[in-house]
Length: 279
Image (tube, rainbow, N blue to C red; front, side, top):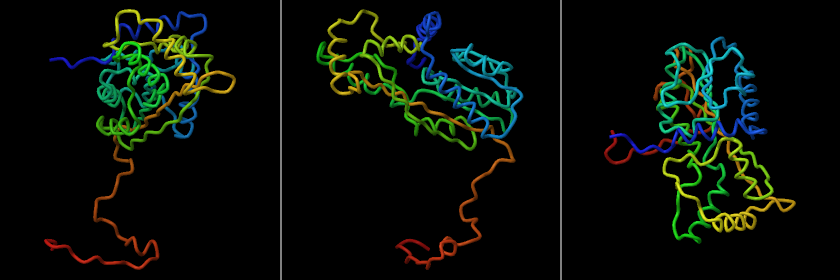
């Protein structure tokens, strides 16, 4: 039996196509991520000769990495096993129905000691909008419906790297706060990002206008910013891991230390009495 799907991929790809067809798509967060990825790669101090990028916005990334293989974030990625020394999953993993499967496919596409780097929206993204829409809908209709994508927390995403078999996993994040004229301006920008509602369980009928009027009033009251505007948070999470290789650092075996911690700290050692049942 197939597991329930979080994302309606047909709707997701349609939302992205509409965004890219707009005169001014809102890709400023993608540009922030691209700059951050380039900076992180300079810190690695290694030349990458075979790059693959998984993204729903190929033109932006193709300009920065003209020699890279660009593939869409389909459920089955068009990546050859062991073909790349760098795989970047760019601003798409938060929509994946099977994020672990995406990571495993990226790991399989890496050569030994190849680098995996992902950027995606994290769990604190749009927490203001999520709260205001939920409160407004409960007030207007007495129930709730899926409106904002539930996104993973950083601690859970870090664990996924290990489950995928990547070595030396690291997860970190930063939050960018953006000010908008009102909640309608925010939702317009989300559509221009290709981040509109593509949840498989979303409502398929129009919502009453009073729902958004109520949500706009709650948003302005709870999250108002300078100049009568509102604040929206976007948490950007970065995941880093390496395809395993013998040259990489490995944790020492428990009990293999050759120096006591007390000696390293220049402190007296306190020997605790054995508890009942200990040898």
